[in-house]
Image 1 (cartoon, rainbow, N blue to C red):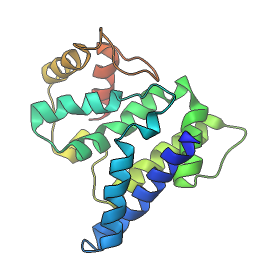
Image 2: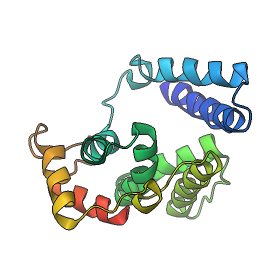
Image 3: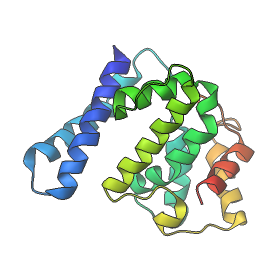
Length: 180
């Protein structure tokens, strides 16, 4: 049930964001986005499970160093994070692809379905004018800056972030580099 609630929120956001970008004064689209945001952040979608906010922590360091908007930063790193971790549970990413982005399920190749879902996410980001990498975000961190961000990212988590696939400093460095 919780998966379906989370997926429903994602579908609602996917649809409403496209309307709001084209028609900024559309009250229903904006209300849907606000309501979905409230439901997404009240703990409901994490009921009965450990939430994984690794991509958020990775983005927080971008925002702290480069003063980028959180949503834009998330869009810029999420695809690289997803490609880095999806093999931990490709069926989970395939479920996201099928249920949120209507990607046709490939029963013979779950990984292909998962990757198509990540691509669908990035296509959607472009449809609403969001970046899908650091270049599109307008930043080009140096290797030293990437290392600093990665170190800060894991500083409070006992050396790792995330629960889906715990990521150490080197993993985060790789994700930032993939995001360039």
